[in-house]
Image 1 (tube, rainbow, N blue to C red):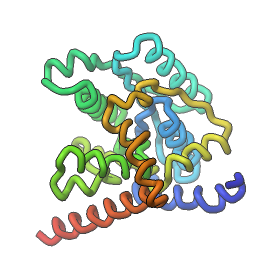
Image 2 (cartoon, helix red, strand yellow):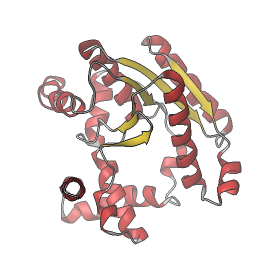
Image 3 (cartoon, rainbow, N blue to C red):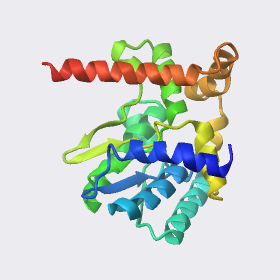
Length: 247
């Protein structure tokens, strides 16, 4: 896809989808890891904020798991925000200690600690929305991950595009309308660099195994499997919302 065709087809879809969640009155805090998804999200919302006139800031959470690499990621995020004149926050959490305290796996403790940080900084800065960089491929992976874990029907809804985080604060996911490949095209078209978390290559983590092994195997039989899974999740989300609205 050329840059011209990308801007004609993908960017309008991104703008239309994000406009469902963000208004002029909002203050949006972006969860910013420095990875490709969050770089795409922050750069895109920075562009959109100038058009829709909402406030924007970024939060980087250091999980205290990767030593010097984590500090390098934090420095990258700080410099990126300075270059683009975006207010920047950072929060350090001790995930290994939290995992022991809460009796959780490292993965689950990191997620719980990260969302606590989102809520705390959102309250401190006055954010009405916390934007996260999950995309369509993440949605497909989440549906399969939930199936492997033995989910109930609601687990097939995958990742919600929006949900409450704390009083007056909502989580939104403006990139759920685009694929990982389209995220990478966005970075390429805008000459944006990012950082790479080496743990994303470790198939000991079930999500990585799904991403690197299971989904590619399924795609050999059905190339549109990611779109099909994400579409199913959205249909089920709509059904659950209709059911709850009718109560």
